[in-house]
Length: 158
Image 1 (tube, rainbow, N blue to C red):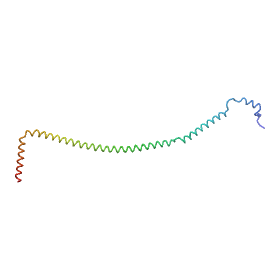
Image 2: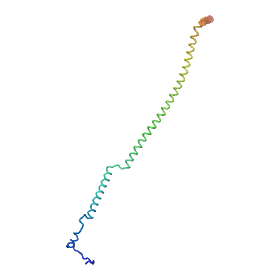
Image 3: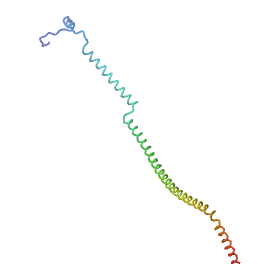
Image 4: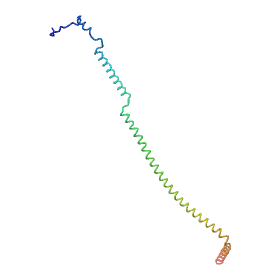
């Protein structure tokens, strides 16, 4: 039946059982392979569960960055509008300041001229106050001359 030179031993024969007694007492390779497959399938199922949870509850990176970009664009547009408003306000304030400074310079010039005129007037009054009491005779003569002139004009008109 068999062409090999070794004779086939029945599984249940005493010789076969004797050979099986010398087998190693440790765990076989199949045991370790089953453990490896168990843990690899466990890891795969955990990965699948985490991906499903991420798809359901997680935000994608693109949407998070697009939200950040949108926030930046909104803040940029708001700051640009504020910048334009502040520049316009600065321009108005500069024009107002220039107008005020011009008016102040004009008022200062008028004040200097009026002070000079007041000083000259005070000097003239002081000069006449000093000169008039000493020259009372000439004042009386001018008053008489004015009366005579007025009487002459009355006489000519009648």
